[in-house]
Image (cartoon, helix red, strand yellow):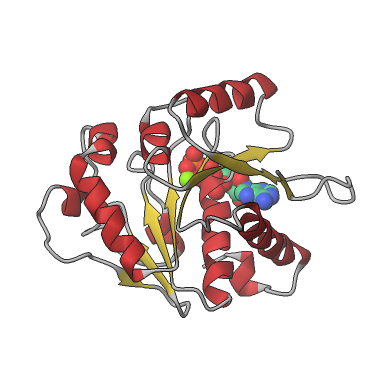
Length: 215
Ligand SMILES: Nc1ncnc2c1ncn2[C@@H]1O[C@H](COP(=O)(O)OP(=O)(O)OP(=O)(O)O)[C@@H](O)[C@H]1O
Ligand SMILES: [Mg+2]
């Protein structure tokens, strides 16, 4: 497991993830976030790394935290935590399992609901009415539920899921994410009536004066 918040919790990078967590709580003082989707305009911009480190910092602060791998197209959170891909979310949506197949991670207070068997129709899975019920069940068991989603511009999944969550965090990678892609991603989410709570900048040059987070 190579998450900086676990291997080097005192590093500036870990501190940046804690700042992100704190800023998210300030953002919604009157209506605390219980469910948050993390996505990005395109592939490979740091969604899974960001959400996994954010989940660890929530758990380290004593909050019961559930991480859900909703990137049914490229699931990788189970590998990050050395856990199983199945049974997971899709098996639950398909009613192949009745109990929530939550897996305990090596971190106190942190559980993973992995993606489950790869489905032919990821967007339909996430849009299913049963998904609302599953989210309710997750919220009952945790203080914060974090959903890793596919890129906004690649598929409808992130917008569909985002509309079911309290908010969406957009991950933007310095030197990689194209400006017009960020704008298109924001437009697409807003059209789907998704509440964008902010953006996290990954891979920012050191000493650039750019914080890891802006509102
Ligand atoms: N804060 C960061 N600073 C620098 N590099 C980062 C940061 N976060 C992620 N990366 C790097 O970006 C790459 C992509 O990361 P990651 O797999 O988390 O992205 P992703 O958006 O989930 O990708 P995918 O679309 O394939 O699911 C990795 O090489 C990772 O190490
Ligand atoms: Mg990913």
